[in-house]
Image (cartoon, rainbow, N blue to C red; front, side, top):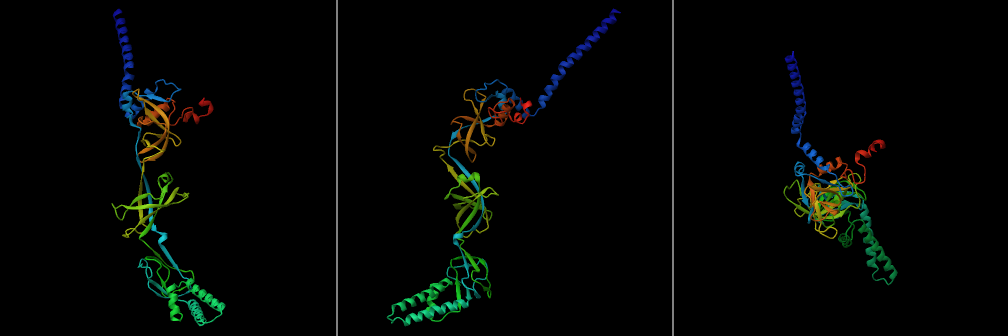
Length: 419
């Protein structure tokens, strides 16, 4: 009996020890397996969270200290705050258009019939003074007759001693002469009428400028009335480019700036234009400002209606009276109202201070800094979001939770829960 009792006690004891050892070993091995399967980003987050739990003085700027391992997991990279000249590239998109200062529209000054038309299709090139059309108008015959008659009367009164009669005849001839000018007859044509001594029943219309006919509103045999738009001529040696610029880019666009642009029709070839006009108002629908460029077109390669992609390069060598202080665009964390950077401590390795700074304009790959940083300091350019996340977890001042304010979650909780 004693042997049986001893065997039972020994067996029971071995079972209890086995369960105890299994309990102690089992959970630890499971945690180890889970840790090994974790994503590197999760490991990085845990490392930063662990580092951020170091007690800090609330009266000082928010600071976080990371171990060497935590820095590697968070892939921390820093860049030095420097002063340098920067180039701002401003993109512009637009279309080629006619230069309105080199555009001539011809309308009828008298009613009549188009008896002959020398320009019968769009796109034809004309030189200044070339005949465009011949128009028949009874109104012209009457006006010419008045001039011829007044001229004859004045010639007959040359020997008269009555000055007031001569004066009256001079005024009559001047009025008739002026009337023909107002009807669209030039001085040479009027002199021909006076020399001929007979009225002409047809009037020739001439091209007022050299260029290309871009509008033709008449046909041979058509009757026209006073004020009808007959044709339009454009000088294509000088053109406009109408572009749209974003509000944020307006600060870099100035009158007289040179802009280079390209066309799909001529890949690889650059053209150059000059800013000549900036609209004084903003388009309410597109939130853009219209910018006009002047461009020379001596080879006639540019055609109105072409789409262009322009780029303006602006060198900034001075900002607030000195060389710009710049940081990479990846350094600041932007909330819309604030910009937060994390500055590496020069005294303690792995220590980073959160700091609110004031940014100037964006200049290519850099932000110009107005205040908050000094030349030579080093700011975090990669891993700053992970640092900021750790600050938020510890309820420290961060990008989303400024100092002296409740964090985002607390602001949206009922008072009873927030307290």
